[in-house]
Length: 72
Image (cartoon, rainbow, N blue to C red; front, side, top):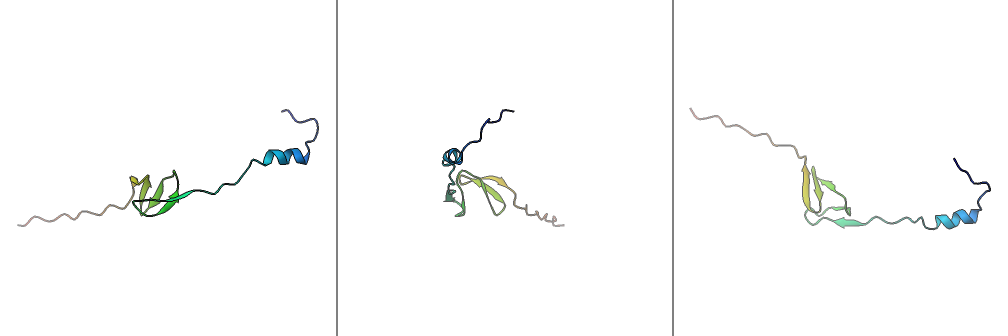
């Protein structure tokens, strides 16, 4: 593996690192649920996965159907 023959100066490393910047994440509010979420990301609300205001996955527990007995 190639390695530098001589040591790089601190100034040279600092020049390279000047372009590494921390950016704040952009948050949005979903129009259908009113929840805040990261932009361009799906988010969970009450067991449902929303993306761009639409339900993508619904994992809410299913309600058991009560079977009525026929009248005799």
